[in-house]
Length: 272
Length: 155
Length: 109
Image (cartoon, rainbow over all chains, first blue to last red; front, side):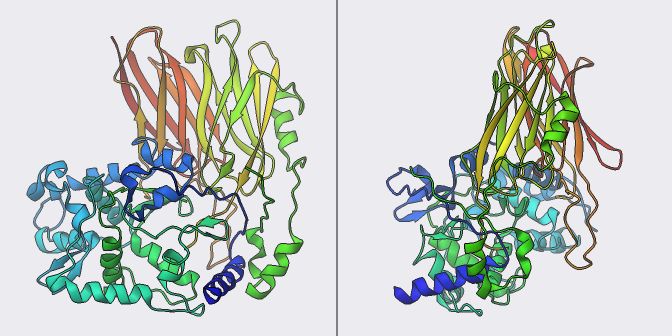
């Protein structure tokens, strides 16, 4: 434990150079009944946020991420590419065809013999079925379409397959989670497992659950993908981030999705 | 709940690297609430004075804002909102931002009551001032402190 | 979200005499004009929604002047005392003389 807290305080000092630092009143609320936002010992990032932030997420209108979902709903009906097809031409009403779908990704893709996430599924459809250009990974279109698709599973418990052909990728994701990296020599687990609930700088460390992505972060002032979040975490520990959509991050996404099994899809979640 | 001291390091201190950051922390706390970043002049420009009675107008903010980029707030003024007696405007100023102006809400009797909400950006812990302009020329003001933690790891 | 999209929420039905809450939100980055481009060091020009106006049956019922201190994707909500059925028109003015608008009907029960 001593070594761990040393690492964390070293990280805190290093991080101070690039951002604001603060000590604030922690809202330790372990006794709170979080309803669907907690399953056994697994707690959504929602439960670590202030009442004001949670209220912004809860209100379908006031949630700033919903503008992106609206845009995704428009894109769903726009025909593009050499086939002249829109998503709706094959999938019809997304509220039926996409219900629960977002809660089951990443999923195994036979053609590439590896798991793919929702973003990659959307681009496969665009390229193979629509004859359209793929969306750029972190583009507004991609984020908004992904948010729209995942929002159709709002409240649906996360349930991802990890056995069979998915097993080796799940294992790789797990290895990544516990592997030390970067100049600070830290693994995901050091913050999000060992120090979950503690403060790092002015922030309350969460379990790093990913059931709300794409998420609207106040820090970003827009929606962002879970791979953007991974890149941010990796940069914070002074590690070279992997590329958006890289195998490493898809495997990590698979493992983290499993860590949040049973938590509800919250897309678009609102976080700080 | 006891209030703890809050230390805020400005982004401009970018050049200070990790090793000196801890020392910087100790030398920094500068908690000036009675400061003037130009909000008094801005208020005077809009309502003719930088002073007013603390009455009838209120501003609601979270006690602690999790992130200064999006701080929800609402203003309210006690008024019958009739043609003869109503609130014309509520101006909101941030006394510790690089620029003081946040926004002005302009009401009419058609609103029925005088309240409105929006979201503001705050660079740090500071006082927020709301100034109500009534149809008969009266001016009232309210102030509220909000603590801003610049949280959120990860770029 | 480079695309600027307004959203409004008006109650579908209300009774005469009710005070209802109108909510509006528009996707906009609200670039302050105070930030510098990380690569070039140049100031990024200000680009904000600077004014919002709500009309009901042609008459202005509420308006707002917005500054760079308003958060990205500006949210504004305000009350309205219902006197008759009609149509709202919401207008946002942005830097560069850009205008966005949206309409919504209010039915009276």
